[in-house]
Length: 323
Ligand code: AVJ
Image (cartoon, rainbow, N blue to C red; front, side, top):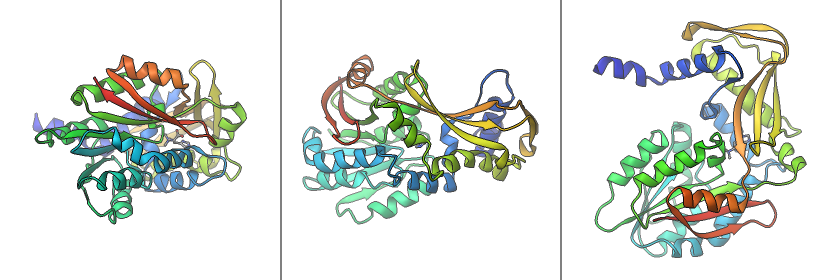
């Protein structure tokens, strides 16, 4: 039993089986967006956050910077801070510094990307009172671990920033938030960043920038398959596509095969056929309305304590409290 559990949890085996499932079935091909973030993908995403067309991360950071004191005032003291997908950690600085003005705080970033954890520890190492303990796990497993560490009457403040919630398929965002809620105790807080619906042109430019950084970020997923699974994708035979799906209110990223071709993934032991113009769906990024977030909060066992919206780039910071 131990042996099979070990084989299954091997990250390469898991990646190979997810790629096989995503590329070899009938119907729409798809790959889980979490695989976009290998070290190269993580670095490309960092560049995306600096593009003039991609206002999301700057809006998130502006809101946290301007309202950190106020946000923290809603959180019962003492509190542990944990973050689902810390990324570089840059935005988190404002919250941690505000927490530190009242008490020393332990911060538990949860990340599957080791590169992100390292960058996060380096970025936040100088925030005086914060002890940083990185947790290299999937979000819910990691959060369960952090919740088990709490002692006495400490509350938990969970950060889920950057609109990563929007990457779940429709319906899966609510399922995920309910799972988060089930790990929390009444009175714990969840600070949820969510990108808002905005004019179509603005959304498309953000996911198909003229420099081609987002295209590189997307294509890198095929490069990663080549590197880690000994694949033979010719990246020049695929192109980046960003489109808005009205029905789901999501920006979708796809990779379109420029011609009919067969790609071998040798370490996975399979080959994937592509028709000309067939796409692989690599990411959805749902765009919320303010009311939709409020409804989501309530159906998942939270109340909406407060909401802050950026003036330049429609994006909302939502403070939810577990009921
Ligand atoms: C990191 C989930 C916020 O959906 O906007 C950026 C990732 N994809 N450009 C997003 C992303 C393409 C991103 N999040």
